[in-house]
Structure formats: structure tokens, C-alpha cells
Length: 462
Image 1 (tube, helix red, strand yellow):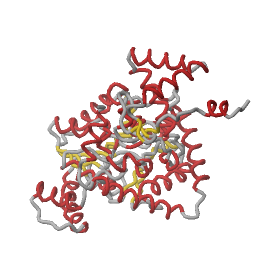
Image 2 (cartoon, helix red, strand yellow):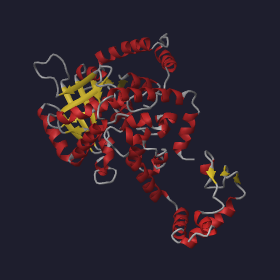
Image 3 (spheres, helix red, strand yellow):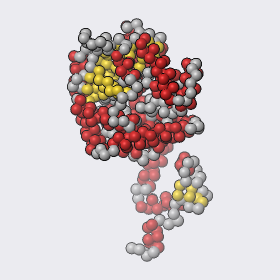
Image 4 (cartoon, helix red, strand yellow):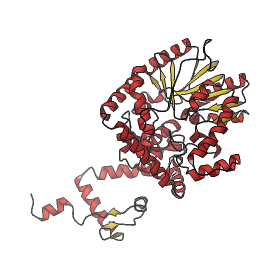
């Protein structure tokens, strides 16, 4: 059994998981429909796809422009080729400032490079300040969804977790739980030496960082600590605020079903002399970690992703097993594409098969990434890389046999004979390996007693 199947089996056995995730995804999908309402969504998607395609096609130029503008605004920009380089640079900044407490706003890139664990090994206390991220942090879990990290948790589970970790006595009322978390986190904001955030968009023309949140924790993480470190995937660039005006509403509507989030933070360098608040230092870490290797491949369009989670919201597989079944940072359809490309087929080659290929993900993607087509291509490449000698020989013989009409007819006759011990009422409910992998979860139609050509000839057709 593949690692994905093993993890999925565990998740499927978790009481109430599918119902909790399915309900949350339905709420978001319905909210998205309401927000888009009378909008010409397809026109917006075409515009967004064109923007992302143009930006990624000219990524080196826009990255240079962004770095120059950010540097001119007083920020320090570091390009990290690998996760290790990014982590080492962040650790160096934290050590040199003597920081002991770091508050973090939500960042999938920080999850990707396992930044929290590295900081904690260095003796630094790290506190996730997004409520969902904080829940999974104290539960010692990874986020289950790109924009809703704790979607797999019920209110009762969150209450029990807070009671166990903090010794609080709480009800299942979300307002009470949120109020308690606010009190815990507010004290951390006031004591923190360093704030670390992700970046939703980097604006090349101005060197600005755009960070969207619904809880205000992004604003607190970027303004209260004296040092702000922003970790950004290299693909998160937009040329200017004009393009941002298209992508930002698509991100918020697709992620949470809102026209705009509660907070949109635009960071333009560290605090200036006449400003009352803000960090004394701003460090921007731009991460490659395998992204540039995709620029010249057929998988280039995966870099268009704006991390909205819309593909997860509609995926029938994700809605049943959740993000943890995928085994990496990114779950759902986008994770089934990204993880094999970043981690390799040896450890994640089974993920492209974690899909029904229904194309709901491609239909939902606000920037028009053909996710299901990428999954098919990854299946092909993974098979080419992982297939053993016997499998290659078997498919080569099958291809040769079916390349001729006599070979095809002979194989069909043999298959009819072979299915007799297993066929019941025109269905194959059990079959020997390798067909048993199909019949373990579905029936197969038995081969007809006659093909169309055989019936045609018997009926006297020409």
C-alpha cells in the first residue's frame, strides 16, 4: 500500500472528519458564489491567468526590480536557493539580535522550510499568532488547509486542546475560545523581539509587501517587534498595484468568500524617523527551493498559484481525507502537483494518483491553472521513473499486441475466457491481481460476449 493510501486510511477512520471538512468547504464554496454573484468570473480568470503567465515568464526581471525597490526603501533582501539557506539566514538574523521570542503570522513558505523547528532547536520560543495556526501548533500538527489550517478540528476539540495546554475552563462558544486566545497572544506580541510573516504578494514596482489577514495578527507581527522578517516564495511577485487590483479580490473571494479581508497590510520598508510605530529592521527572504527549475518545464503554470485553497475546497478526495493524508505541507490538488515536483517521485510519486481527475480543481482555480492536466502529466512521469523492468516489459508487449487487429481480437477472446470464474451478472466484483486493486473498491463491467464488429458480421453487415 502506498504512503498516501496508508495515511488516507487513518484519516478516513477519524470520526467526523469528512463531515467537518465537507461542511467547512461547502460554506466557503457558497460564500464564493455569493461574492462573485453578477461578476463575469471567466473574464476575471482570463485576466488573472494572463497576469500570472506574463509575470512568471519574466520572473527574473521582476524579482530584480522588486529587490532594487525594496532595498531603496530600507529593506534588506536575501535570495535563498534552498530551504537550508533560507533557514540559516533567518537564524543568523535572530541570533545576532539576541532574540528569544518570535511571533509568526501565517506563512505556508515558513512551513515548507520547517522554520519553526529550526528556531526552537536554537532555543527560540516561536508562537503562531493566526488562530488556526496556533491551534495546530499547540496540537503538534501541520496545517490541514492552505487558508484554514485547523479545518479538521471541531469546536469541542479546540476547547479541549486549550484546556489541556493552558489549563483554562472554556465552553464550546467560538467567541469565548477566540477571546481567550486573544488574551494569550496579545501578551506575546508585546514581548516579542522578532516578527516573522509570509507574503501574499510582492509588488515589483515599489518593493511593497502585501499581507492579508482576517485577525489583525499580521499587522501586530509587522509593527510591534523591532525586527520584521518576511519569507516569500519567489513566484509571489506582481508587476505593480494595477495587477494586484485584479489578483487580490480573486484571492480573498476564492479563499474565504469575502470581497476583501479585514486587514490588507502594505509594508514599505522599516519604520522611518517620523513614524510612530513599525519595525526598526525589515528583512525579506525570497525562496527558490526548486521553483526556478520548473520555469522551463511543462509544469511552469503551477507557479501561477496564489495559495487561495479554492482547489482544496472543491476536491472530493481532499474533502474526505483532509490535508494530512498528503504527507507534506501542501494538501489537496495543488499539493498533489507541488509536492512531487519539490520532493521528488521517490517520496511523493503516489500523490498525483490521489485524484479522481474530475477537473473540479481546474474549474475552481481563480488563475486558471489546469491542475488535472498537470496531475496526468505527473502520473506519466512518475510511472516512467518508477516502473520496474517487468512492468515496462508487460506494457511493451500489451502495446505491441494491441497495435494489430488480429492481436487485439485474440487478446479479447482470451480475456473472455479468463473472466468466467469471476463474472457474475455481467460484473466483476472480485478479480486477481493487478485488477484486484480496482475491484477492492469498485465493480468492473465484464467483457461482452460479442464485440460490435462480431455482432455486425453475424448480422450480415459489410
